Length: 268
Image (cartoon, rainbow, N blue to C red; front, side, top):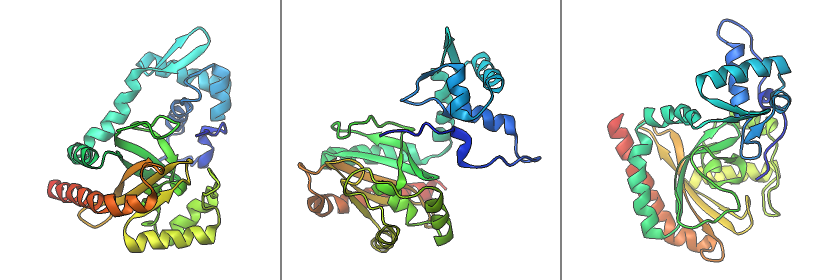
């Protein structure tokens, strides 16, 4: 899945003021500029990707290096394993993922397909838990991986829960993109699809993100009934056609999601 080479900080305009620490935001932009496509970068590349000056990028990189989050070799900078502490702080602060893992493992053992959980972050879903079986995609997926919400079953499950104004604003800033010949790119048709997902309580995406990939998703809800995450089963269409996936896996997936939701509500 190609990643954008545009400036990392360009998604939202700066908001200077007492409640907005610009230097901190710039530091996060530098961290986010590293990716699978850019695991190592020069100072100039970081500056270009973040929209910072070379001097500004240099100060942030050296600060991150002194804190142990970045290492350098010659002119190349890269993140260190310590950066995982930031993500672990999020995962460990919520009981959901510890509760969900054994339930998802049991589901994978039952259906013999991969199972994942993700949350919505802007126009993307972010994987917070994944129990794989076989390699089913040409990209590697793990905790922290991002995929476009509009072309994924978990993304549509969560987008269907957004208020209308918030959804329209998101689609205006992130227009629908075709990833395969099957991807829905017409806004009216996409809106109808989200209405259907909202009404039935689950979502099936058949080869819209990647040829051969079919995915089925349901929401995980908190005590107030809000969809705080989504959970899916995904597989190869030749092995498990979409109709067969719904017939065979949907009841088991719904049962697993309901179990996780109940456990979460008991912890709340």
